Image (tube, rainbow, N blue to C red):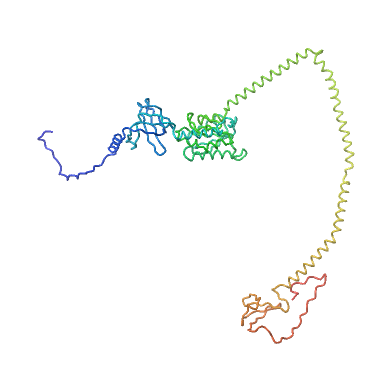
Length: 494
């Protein structure tokens, strides 16, 4: 644009106030922190235990260094891997030299390792070695105490996580080789709770009975996929190892890959390189067994044919040494056998006839009259016993009837609802019975209930004594019932 060109501008705007603390972008802050870390910690030496080693396809190695309280991520670039004093392995305690930097994409810091040297076994591995020595001295690793695996298991128990590829691989391999019943006990296979759940599963399988609703397995498989030392550390638990050693059921340990080793691998009855390998160890191949049985059957038929042919050859050789032909030697015996067999039918018939006559003679004495006489004798004995006990029973019934009548008359006499002659029952106006003088007050209205009716009365204030009273006409007493007369009713007493 030339100097004499014109520029048209809009109306002037008010200038924005200046900010003494302008905001930073995320990237600016991340790279500022990265420069600060690299300048402050450009050369450091760290000691720690290696875990979670990941060898990337690019050639770089990513790992984690940790101690008992903290952890830091580390990276070894491809160019520095060959010059390391030791190659990183999980559980190895090392001393590394490098610089601290950050990874801005995740806002995390890490150490770029330039050199590495061994510092001795890691704390966890040293602890594990001491535990191995103690259990070995107790004899838990001895081959003599390991139980043999069943050759043809009917039921197999699998202790593993119900999700993941491990259980699918084990079930598929068992179904392919030896179709049998499989019982899965789901557990977690990583973390603090894993060792306790696996031990409980082993004890639970051990407590089953062979003839129960859930049969006890003939073999157990403890399975888990591969992982780091920390992931598999739950299988180095001492209590779990002792539970595996004390189990009555044979156990196959299939934890991790072939290069992974845990404590239960030493105390189990068999160690498998992988979970799929455990399924192969536990089961035979059904097709191979069928082929072996067919081959044995074929060999048995051939051996039987050769044996018969050998016996036939030997028999012919022996027959050539006889003074006459075998047929001539057997002819006389065969003739005698024919003669005896022809007489056998008539002899059996005569024997049957003799026994039939004896049975008829014995059966004639076993007529109905013999049984009837026995029944009559027993009937006479029963009648005699009944006649002897009848008077005694009748006397006892008469005596009990008299006692019952006397008790019935006494019960009627003592009935409070029907007073005896010369007595009355005192009731309040409400119908309550008065049983003591203390329950009465002067001027109180009461009812006197006699045997033939009731009258009203009023209580006076005296002590109840009277100067004189008209003579009462004696009431005739009822006559006692004569023997044999009907029992009087309760109303006849009044």
